[in-house]
Amino acid sequence: MPGALTILHIDDDPDTRFLARELLAEAAAARGEKVDIRWLDAPGVEEALAQHQDLHPDAILLDNLLGSEEGVSLVPRLRRIWSCPVWILTGLSPEAIEERCRLCGVAGIIPKNAILQDGAHLLAFLLGQCRPPKN
Image 1 (cartoon, rainbow, N blue to C red):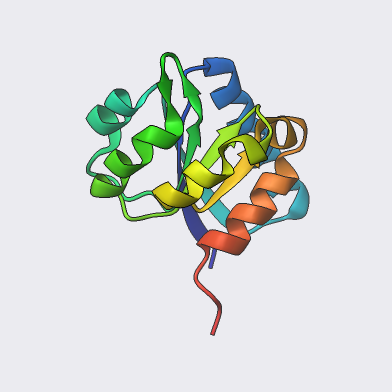
Image 2: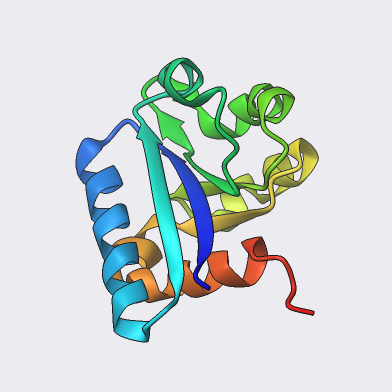
């Protein structure tokens, strides 16, 4: 029976949201993954809360630069609503924000260029981190 994985992607760039979703779907199809990926997206935290507050994502992908806001500073607010892991997507060097992410309880930092070039990396990471272990 196929599994299901719900991802909430918060990014102010619609092209990035579209490309990440498409690459992830292509990677799943190419690997023959038996997982239904439900992709939720929003251009900002306010929109995510308005559109998806009652849903339960398995993971949140959060852009670190959301207009004038920094994604890392928004993590505590997201954690009050959703208890799932939050990963920061960044075009910066991960080392530049690593300490702040650790202090905010971020599950990890994903370089944007890695997922926008090859969705297989993101798929493998998400499936490995979000799926419950098989018994």
